Length: 136
Image 1 (cartoon, rainbow, N blue to C red):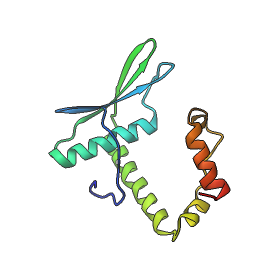
Image 2 (image 1 turned 90 degrees about the vertical axis):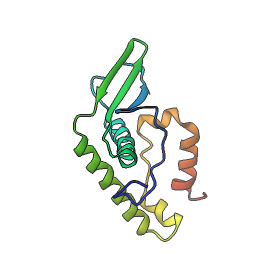
Image 3 (image 1 turned 180 degrees about the vertical axis):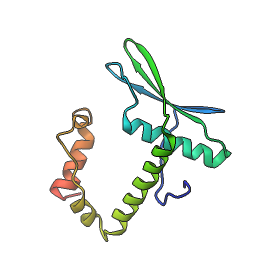
Image 4 (image 1 turned 180 degrees about the horizontal axis):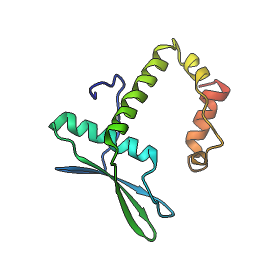
């Protein structure tokens, strides 16, 4: 568990060097900056490394495209650390406010209009079953 976070963070670090953590992302087109979700993810990994080693690694996201690779370093680390801590607190509060899975599912509704669902049909089926149909 990360300090200041009462919910488990599970993930796999793509590349960890002595002074840097790198997250690899594939993209059909070049990125001109770090996507917020990716900054959040790589900073959460950097927080875990700092907790283990006492040193802050550089947090970098590498975007690999058919045209090549672009790398971006997270420069607002403190902002993203606070975002990770705040989000974990909000998740904890949400979970604590629900006495059952059904109660939780009634408070959370996936946004199926988002593009990500087109690429995750199994996850969409699962979400429809558990959040919309209520048969999970």
